[in-house]
Length: 185
Image (cartoon, rainbow, N blue to C red; front, side, top):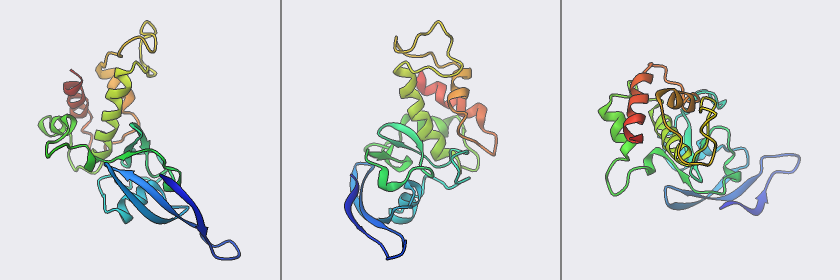
């Protein structure tokens, strides 16, 4: 995965391209990409995976959140040529035709309105559950819960803090927290 060693570019500082191998949702794709192509643009424009959205294009809204190596990342800030771990998008969360439990909870708890931010919210929530289960503290984790000694209890305050990088312009936050709490139980 990542960029292959062969590059081409115009003399005098033209754009360089590389053969980039991306493993996305379990499938390996080989793409000739300009070195400046973000993971978000590679997903949307070259692989037709349009779940991750281009919101602010500055890593501030979370609409482009995907999982890279199981960790959440703002795909608008990651260059595709540097992506050397498996990528999971909202399209890859469902298994064998069944929605991921968080996808089901977002629907049942009405945790979306316009839906623009929902793919990023769900991908972020998937990582949030894994982080808490691994004992990774957040800013609001009580000091008596030492890191690495079991899962962090996901209170509404913990969930809100851990999801603070994902903006919902419609204000569906209470239902988003409810959906994540439902799955965390």
